[in-house]
Length: 448
Image 1 (cartoon, helix red, strand yellow):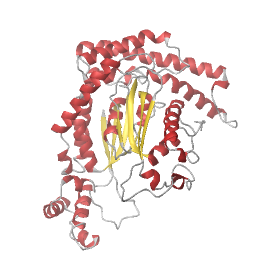
Image 2 (tube, helix red, strand yellow):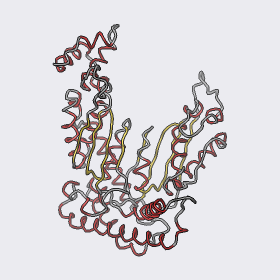
Image 3 (cartoon, one colour):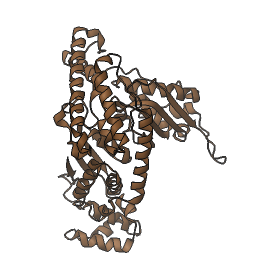
Image 4 (spheres, helix red, strand yellow):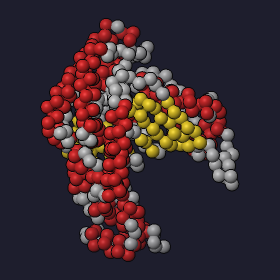
């Protein structure tokens, strides 16, 4: 695992602008909020040659809490190389106010050499050989199915939807994506990936505190590396980034819930699709919603257009019983609202193009190892999961954010399974909000 901080500096043409550190920026803006002077007058009192003294002087006067000042540090960019897909998922779950990207499965190494060691992940020593062998078999299954499906698509061009005017290079790319998008359910969740996030010092401190409070060795290692990097940029504010009792207690309780649910529901049989949608349109009696839903939606040229108060004030919770981890990794990155999953294996998804029988022994062994890790109460059970593991997933947000997600994940270039999942919840939403039907654009996931 490698952690790199990326500093933001003024452009070369901005030589006349003051160059301030993130903490100096935060302290100056904090002072600005308690002064009737302009920002220029405050900056004139700052000794840029000795910023630490200026920061201490301002903070001693302002006496703000670290959180309110930490949010003023601007975007601090951190790149996390070679972290497991599980840790990448967890960071996005925790960092709800971050902007970020993760390496696509189409571009990372699919091989047992691209796994952290069993010790790094906290796999019990006596189970480490068994885990390593299982991971190697999972990668072998991925490569075998990828090769078979790629060959099948090459021999039968009609299997893959392609634009009528597609160039040969595009046809090749879409054919390979067809194979990868179906074979990927054998990829281990422990596979290494890369993540880049940008957020304020305040949110980094919360993220690192949360990681440091988890029982997973990889999370605590990442917390230390991120903290050490950010101490170079924001030393005062990152002092509030260590493990804390309330975070540890909640992490322990969530792990216990996952172990109990996971042990009870562990299965390799695919789950039948079920969705649950709850729409809440209630408003205070003294401030009723006056805008029709149609007026909230009809003026948009596309999904990025502004929606009105009718949908922005409407609360929506939607959930699936069977979100495969392959899809969860992406849907979890829709940052609005609250996302929750116990991250268990209640069934295993394989697309219709992949027969289950040839892989039954692999999946039986995978489920047996997961069961053993759960029986021991080990948080490392997550690292025995493959991307086909199905888990319940719930997202609570507002209707405008839900509509954006539904249009995006059924739109052009969307993965076929995203489209199935989002189409199902969209149908239920439109039953409850029929006035939106003419203005929400459900896509067909046509290839780009």
